[in-house]
Image (cartoon, rainbow, N blue to C red; front, side, top):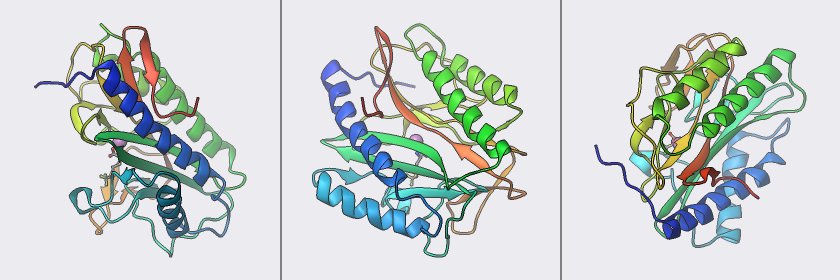
Length: 253
Ligand code: MF3
Ligand code: CO
């Protein structure tokens, strides 16, 4: 199992691709409001990307036949929600938006769960705990640490918030392809154990259910929902492991 290590120059290219993703999520954030549909977000990002970064390509569109630029996962949808016109956002909903691009041969990938207006206390905790789990894992992404410690801290953080870690899906290596080795598990004992090295780039993506960790896939072949249709959240960053420690590539500053 060979993990590709990227050079400093390549990390710069990863940064450029990931910056576009970060900007797109920032742009989409303002469009998340009651009455908007998942398809509106898809249309908006298509237009935005063409206008703003004509050289960038959508990473998900056409990937194993995936039909959209975005994954838009509302409430009980955990990940890989195909944006639909019929899915209308309403006050109190949550919506996870996942976006990826390829620029100059390198990939960016990031996701965030947004609130639609005001949400309940328990939903606030769901978002807070899942985002905390992401940042706790990022803090462990330094050379010499074991990959499994990222999974452990994701799991522990989610449990501390009484959330239900989703072990079936997880993060991945990323670079000159969207999905590369290693699998970055959200639960210990699931993914490979290996020492992290400078030049590795990981998409770390904790997912959690408010009431359950059990999921099922819809007949569209993509959309993953919780089996009992209770809400779930998802946060993802692309992170480079450098000699100086973790470097979040998919953020604005
Ligand atoms: N960030 C998601 C992932 O890494 C998005 C993939 S959607 C797909 O799994 F269409 F590209 F598969
Ligand atoms: Co990803």
